Amino acid sequence: SVLPGDLMDLISREVQSTAAAALVIYTRILQELLDEANLEWYPYIWNLHDATTIEVREQDVEQATEIFRDALRILNHKLHGDLEITGKPVSGGTLSAVKEVE
Image (cartoon, rainbow, N blue to C red):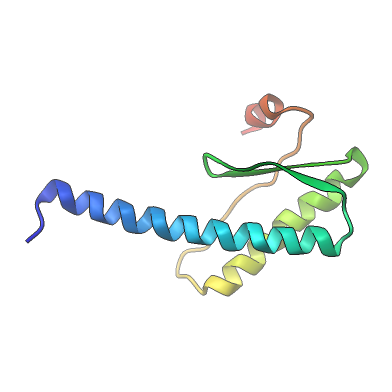
């Protein structure tokens, strides 16, 4: 039998591990799409508190933002989940500027 406190821990572990697996798939999709677009990009912070951050040239921001949207759409299609994973790409000159937008 599972103790009540342990049940929440078990559920949390399942959710966290599933989310981590989805993030790995998402970043792989992003990498492929960014490379296919021939964008010069760098994984500034690939994963920080449910955010994936890359660095691109200023003239490529709009295209990179669209690629983030496309990657999310592809991810949801691949996962066939009951709940859609959502996100809103934002851009800024610094990490703090991006965080202020949220």
